[in-house]
Amino acid sequence: MTRLQSIIDGLENKKIQQDNDNYSDVLRDYGYSQYKSGTRAPGFDVKASELKQFFKKTPKPKIPKP
Image 1 (cartoon, rainbow, N blue to C red):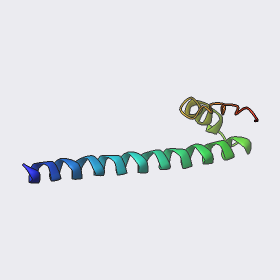
Image 2 (cartoon, rainbow, N blue to C red):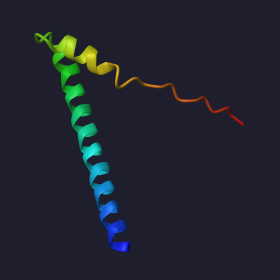
Image 3 (spheres, rainbow, N blue to C red):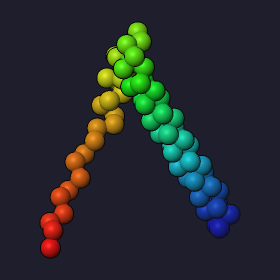
């Protein structure tokens, strides 16, 4: 049973790593698309606006001063 759990853990860790790699790649691509959009390169305005929906910034909660 421990061998099976070890295999399951290995697969879950691999998936987490792949998800992180994919997120990093898309974030880098979004930054590049924003840069190219600023240079008025054809097609990047649409691409950057499409990707923007996945990277909405949420406001940080205000911490009251003591």
